[in-house]
Image 1 (cartoon, rainbow, N blue to C red):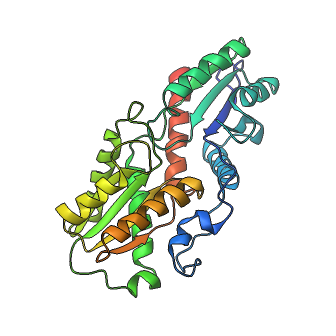
Image 2 (image 1 turned 45 degrees about the horizontal axis):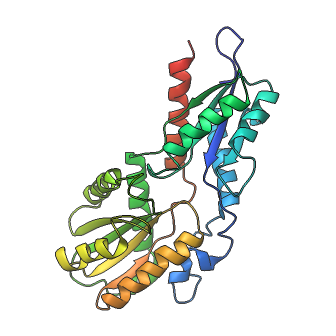
Image 3 (image 1 turned 135 degrees about the vertical axis):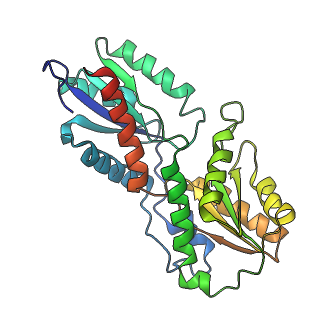
Length: 295
């Protein structure tokens, strides 16, 4: 959509990610869990800058909009920042702008910070009409993508070569940490249940945060090992791209869990990356704004 029916309003879209300059090394990706550092299941995950560019290109295609209507922006580390992105669209003649959060979860960045950004941009660019699209949130597409990552690793030669034991298969889903005051993670528990339902019998799913708040990785792993009696734990980083959180918190946390439960087989999938299952959610959120505002 570029114009509404009266031909006066022109629409632009800002895809708004968190931002990072890291993730260019396999040492900061799930590959680091593998002993040889280059497993057959490696997906050559993009760094955050490259991955976000891929996401913006896919979203543009799904929305069938011109390249001039789309600007990729980040909350930190990578320019343009939100007010600069909106200004760019305004200078191109777009007076209606949808800000589409590209964030996993309901933490501070996806809630409080988004509302603050909207108010700040409106003050800096009078006359612009800003609309905040819904975030990714809890969606069956995301559950399907996690199941896809699990099945991909299960189908790898490396996974098949290791005896996974006779107990249930444990799945440890780990999101980037958020302080509990901003996100109670109830949506994460619901997502975990959706994933377990899709995986079927002989699977147990437990969810965790990489750092900051509850539930912790230690707590979630204990639930799998001690309460549900799993013989293997496959960690799924609920993160878009490689980076310091994946390296330091997720892989580091799983190493500590491995030391605590040496009898349990441990493995790790690649992060979520850029996938049409994710981008279709964002595209739907933008279309919802268009349908609500445009006549």
